[in-house]
Structure formats: structure tokens, C-alpha cells
Image (cartoon, helix red, strand yellow):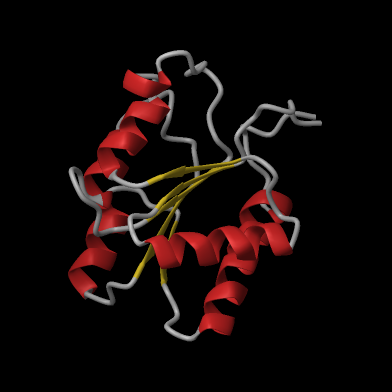
Length: 150
């Protein structure tokens, strides 16, 4: 069982429409109860490391999944990914790059830095909702993670 206050998903998305769609898809499918929504890369790092407005957060409790947009204000998704995957205490957190970029260089760099999955956001509403449902289902219900507590 997971602690009631344990964060299952950190969603880092600056686009309000994509953010709302992702939240609706996760909640509609009852995939995640505890979701933290952040709007830029700097805020994501502050959250993970318990800095600034998140100073009271227990940094020893990692989220089960980070959904990370590539193009973010203040600090882009690749820089956030680099920080997460270079830290021995954070690198086991599954990170899914959820982005509109189909650029081969973005895909390659994401995998080079250790992303667990790279998904291009579908333009169509129903397909976007389905993609989010599948991501949540796989990473939270199907995937065996070393972070998982019995």
C-alpha cells in the first residue's frame, strides 16, 4: 500500500490545455490519486529537492513517475532530465518525456540522458487522452519498480 500523501505522478507541463487534458485522463481512468502539477523546469527541480516553496517536502520520498514536457520555461526538460538522471538518489525515478517535438535530435538526446520513454503528444483529443491513460497504466500499474513498496 502507498502512503496517502505519497506522490504518484509529477506532471511538468507549461501548456494549460495539455495539463488539463492529462489530469482529466488520469483521473477519469482512476490511474493516479496524488498528482503534483508543476509549470516549469525550475519548479520541478525545486520540488524534487525540497527547495523554495517545497522546502517542507520529504526529499527521500520520490514520485513514482515524472511526466516531463521538453519545451519548458526557465529550465527545459532536457536540463531537468539531466539533473534527475545524474543523481544517484533520483535516477531510478521513471521519467517519460511527453512532448510535441518529433525532432530526432530531441529524441536522441533524451535517451542519451536516460529518459525511460519518449512520447509525442497526439494532436487529436481522444488520442491524447488514450496516450495518457496508457502511460499511467503502464508506469503505475504494470511496471515493477525498485521504488515500489509492498
